[in-house]
Length: 317
Image 1: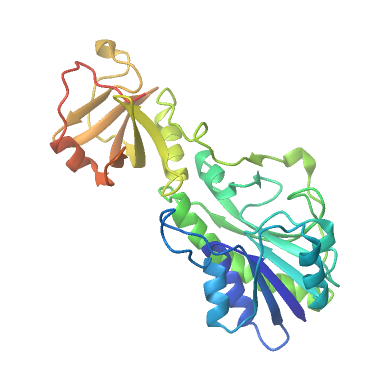
Image 2: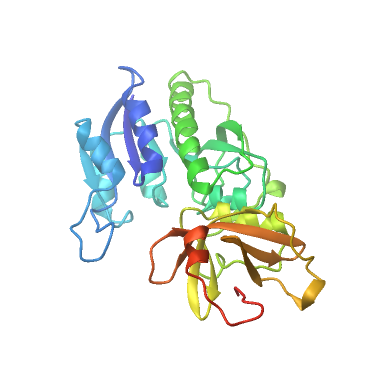
């Protein structure tokens, strides 16, 4: 089976390696990925994508592409005569590309579709407090994330699991699902399942606007929000007109005033014994790791040791 694999970030690498190690029946004839780019700063040397680096290590031909709608790209895909195109964390492909695969093109998505269609399924799974998630392989069609489901693998979400940790687990689970999907296609055993439009939820792109912490939410919601955005793009708040990234927050285990006491409001914080607590709608959360604008990432102890404030009720906003 001739396979073209398309992917860019580290999430796609386990799938690429799994296909390469799945046996002689599967031949990856081409890997398509993004262009080399500076990864740490604009002035740094361009670096290969994680997928390109892995493909080069395995001796697989690589094509770097900027515009998936370029007719030259479609011509290149045609010359490789793919039986299947496998997509994992890549771009939205036009029909001129995905319709060229003889047995179909499929995508690996990091949710249990139709839940969390969109760009950030892992993050929104945790932000919304879901207890279960998984991966889905589905055939590509013109409308994004709407194709018929081939198979799904389920897994519980850990109570303290961050988006980064969950994505890493799902990349491994997804790699197994990709190989299973290829075998089903090879053996002619695929039984596609229509997605139930009544069950659709969205996972929109993460922006500066929708990653700001709302301290007027309950304890559980604030903690889920923080871990759902950790380590990237990171939940944030403001202190003294400067942005503060919050990497880890947990429900407080320390006896503090009730929200309605002492005239305090959500966002007010308290430093107790080098521990940092923030009032929310129905209690307090403890901040364990944060980063002040222009500073390096630090734990709360370091923040508290250097904290000085004249305000009666200092506040994040």
